[in-house]
Amino acid sequence: MSSRPRIVVVGGGFGGLWATRALSGDGVDITLIDRRNHHLFQPLLYQVATAGLSSPDIAAPLRHILRNQRNVEVRLGEVTGIDMQSRTVTLADGEQLPYDCLLLASGATHAYFGHDEWSRDAPGLKTLDDALAIRRRLLVAFERAEACEDPDERAAWLSFAVVGGGPTGVELAGTLAEIARHTLKREFRNIDPSHARVRLIEAGPRVLASFPESLSAKAQRQLEKLGVEVVTGTAVSAIDARGFTLGEQFVPARTVLWAAGVAASPLGALLGVDRDRAGRVPVASDLSVPGHPEIFIAGDLASVVQDGKPVPGVAPAAKQMGAHVATAIRARLAGKPAAPFRYRDFGNLATIGRMAAVVDLHGFKLSGLLAWWFWLAAHVFFLIGFRNRIIVLINWAWAYWSYQRHARIILGQDNLERHPGERRDPS
Image (cartoon, rainbow, N blue to C red; front, side, top):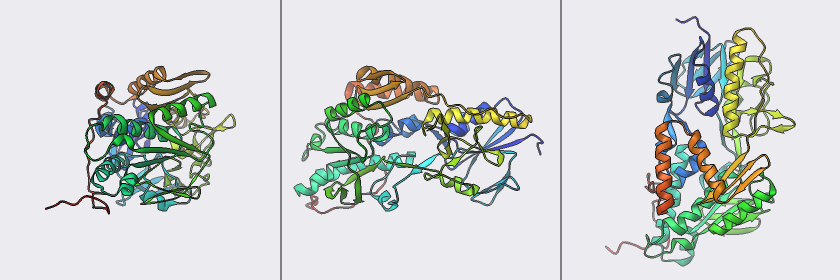
């Protein structure tokens, strides 16, 4: 049995993976645990949901990524217990793993603001499973509309709503409008997909609230140019299989997508320490848990305030936290104090649709085509693996010239049952 320090990392996302890779040259043994066998490039997850990319284009097996890092063991499993006294992590199968230092970087999940019952009829987007389920819903909606004889039922199938005007909501709504108006053109006989109504609903006064107001206004105009109906200042008050209620008005819509809120992974509850309203764990300046300097938190599970503002739950922040935790662990094992974490905010990017995006780089603002090219280059650059970069570039180039989305394959059986108003097979 090795006498080297044992590091357990929970979560193979940006925070966990960046910490693991940063410790590659250190004399430590690392166990990386994740419920899934892959690292996911979440900023492009909406592209899988809207059939622009396939799952392997934005994901890579963790074992493959870390194949040359000999001090890492990858474990497929779920953490169900943490004993801070004995310094052990318990997995769902009952196995216990000891640690000298522990990093929790398990990310976030959906938050429905006390209405968890909405999750069935308004799925969110956090995993590849979510993306494939959303893709199925979107494509099946057009198929069901094609089969409907009743005009009201057909209109309901061609009514789409995205709840939440942040980057994910804007990206989903803009791309969905593009699919309806361009990708599906001439493919149906009984419906015109361009007649689909795509609504983006934001309870606040404007979309992309984290951007300057000028860029937020430009984003809304670009969305409307694509055919998206932007609704601001009104919250959704109910959602079911038939549609949603906006204020006091019921709107028939068979496809509602949720992009309005996130909550931290429930893993933080296993620590038995204070958490904020979103379930995040307030951490010390070096990202350790107060009173437990051997336990660190990174990514969406960490509540970090800098200069009076919370550090946002975005990929660059998680990467920086992961790299910092590696430095802090190195200092801790050497018996030295760990330096405080300092987040470097490089700006915000959001794409809206074909040749439409907004970029805010601390006063340097772009919108439209130039912003779209900047967004594209940045996302390709940060993808994991040379293969993924090449494949994504080829797919985007093809989609740019042809308006086509190659991944329009319906998988699974959900929503394939018949509904009232559909045409019946005459046989």
